[in-house]
Amino acid sequence: MAGSRRLELAEALALGPRWRHACHALLYAPDKGLLFGRIPLRYAVLMQMRFDGRLGFPGGFVDAQDDSLEDGLNRELREELGEAAAAFRVERTDYRSSHAASGQRVVAHFYAKRLTPEQLAAVEAGAPRAKDHGLEVGPAGRSCPTSIRSRPCPPLLWQSLTVGRCWAWCGCPCIP
View 1 (cartoon, rainbow, N blue to C red):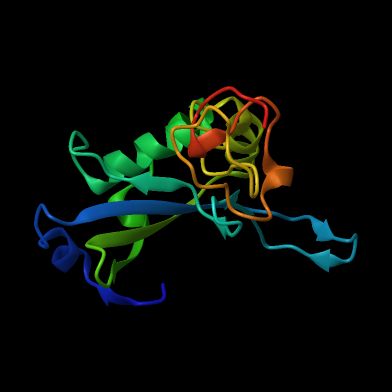
View 2: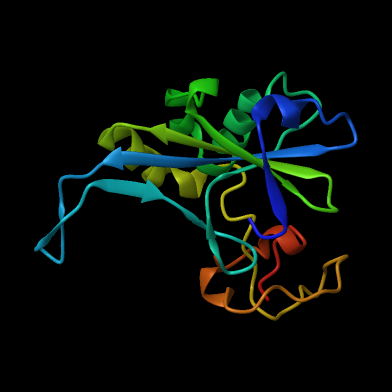
């Protein structure tokens, strides 16, 4: 993370109430397949298109009602990935690192959770039906005509738009 410093988990948790915590998880499973029918694979990894056109991992901000970082992360996973994410739980033992963003009072926590190939396939198959699936992605360079926000969606994401939703930029059901 550019412009950040690594923290121990205890140090991050002791920062106080003026800091926000975001948790993201690498969900992966063993994969015995072959890439292009020739190159052995080791793992399949679940990633998402982010609002800025980059790939990222599912997760989000921990809310005040969440009892722990892991509770917040598991809530976010269910919201973004659907009910298949309820078949497993990311635990403190899956924690890998924390980084504080300089000047933003945000700490990013990263977890890695190994799933079975069947669990990962179920998450991938069910994600499009999740409550918040796709809300990170909007139509590139276009503003929703009914939006209360005036800024255009980030470039290079138009192809990710599911027809009928402007996603996170305004949440309305318009077709841009």
